[in-house]
Image (cartoon, rainbow, N blue to C red; front, side, top):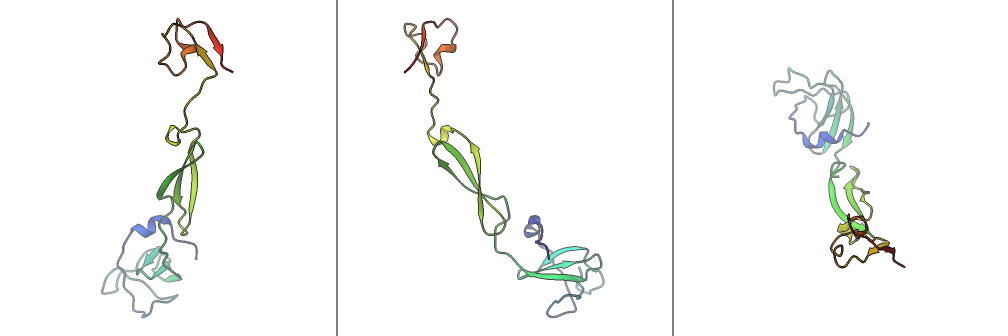
Length: 141
């Protein structure tokens, strides 16, 4: 049986059956009188997941997963100056995604290879060499 889609774990549907325990080839019903069958899909009683066809007949059974759904944010961390986010993979594991290289969140500060000596007019800017009117730029060693 293929893994149920991740949205499955957030839905709760009550179903009924004449079978006890429910097994392959049992029919799942949507009402207590057992007159309306469930449609094709995945249904769970919290212990097992039942895959049914369009007639509500159970095709396959698998155990429920206690894993968080895929792509749920877990944490963020820095590796050097690069910012990463950690997400769940839906199989009780995680994966990391690079969010921003040279991130200020990770302590990165922009450094420019040029400096200007304009009598104090450019000292407060990140890159004073691009300020109009600032002259006498030289490359720092």
